[in-house]
Length: 294
Image: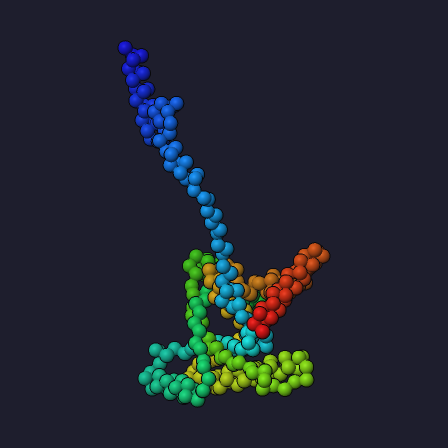
């Protein structure tokens, strides 16, 4: 009797298992989904090519030629100059002071007859430089007593921990001036002279616009500073690497020689040849693009 009960229980478990796995109850029986499998096999296989991950920087700045003379140069001889603006505490001022700022700003806008763009960027607040400066000052002070030195060290350590645990961001404000140089208006004997005159004309015009904004906005208690080549590169770096820029700071790239064409440290000949080949390929690609445009 026990054997019959065990056989019944075993048969029930076997039936349940085969049903759950969608297999025939009898091992020699046909699978129910055989016909569907045959239909699938009869269909033509379709190959799906996964799309390559887009290179966002190249997609957005495909027409950028170079960053030179504190300007961004495009393929069609369009030049863009970036200026950083240090704003004033407008809402902390009195009504009379706010009125003066409004008048100065509106006066500047009424004087210009060329387009000006305003660009805002949220950037990570990096306190490493002030911390290093305070630490260096503490070490150089000879008359600093032991208690003050310990208090200063504890304060700097807490400040560094606070910055690492809760990153803060600030808004950077920029003015962008754009100017297109027409080659037909420039007379030159050769390509080298033409290139030099194009750069000089673009820089002189954009620098004039920068000075106009700087002098006018100074009356509105706003400071305007010209971005160098490195400053423009840092702006791009922070725009495309907002999260990564928290740990991998732009200033560290220069220290690690990541911005140099060739590192000053010793490199193998194979690595140097690979870099040269990459540069030649980039130049060839740029020349092909110019030919297509032409």
